[in-house]
Image (cartoon, rainbow, N blue to C red; front, side, top):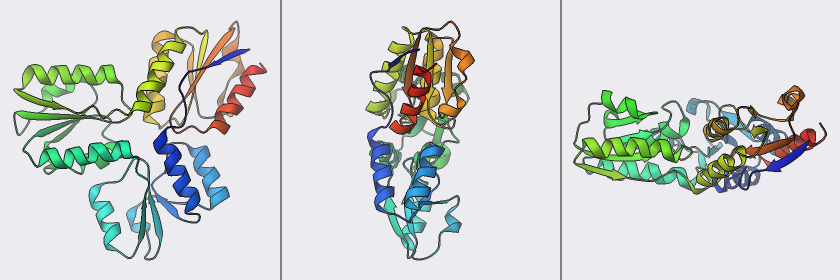
Length: 277
């Protein structure tokens, strides 16, 4: 089986940084999963004794807490810092930026629209920085804007860092048509742009596309969505164990991309398996 890798894929700066922080702070625990990749989290647990808190109430005095790459709600971070707890912040700088934009712009009487998934930890954290949380609105598609009652006619728009730029543009265009003042902040990170563009290009040229990453990873699911538009035989797998060799019947060229939380060792296992089909 022939395999072709996307020109840009896998670990981004923020994930590399977070993993290095976790390795340095051996024996510490993360507040929520550090990244959206269970295999890598298990590696950190086995090799570096990195634990996991599911809830802020599980933290004990004198513990060392690593803040996940997606960040946590503002009040949770404040609570940790007020206690006798060592806080090591591994929040991706690309996530910290929209947090601070929301904090700053909401003080200037702007209603805020976040393009993202309301249940995603990154979006929960960003939303928590608003002055009036009831005037911070999260949407996944342009049609949802019609149901929002804004407090102000000045609107600021933010995007979850891993969302699709074309879909964000649709939301921004609709806001501009309906409101007298709209401030647009392009908070989609560079790595997301590059990985999505590379996946879009490659999926046009192959018979089958394999996307490697966590099933709960927003950026990985976005890559899968992009690839499906161009290549019907596009499959999302977390590791080599999920690859089904029947997918490759009558296929000659397989394209591979991976989410920003997918380490090279997992990617290489998938590549080796497919090349031997």
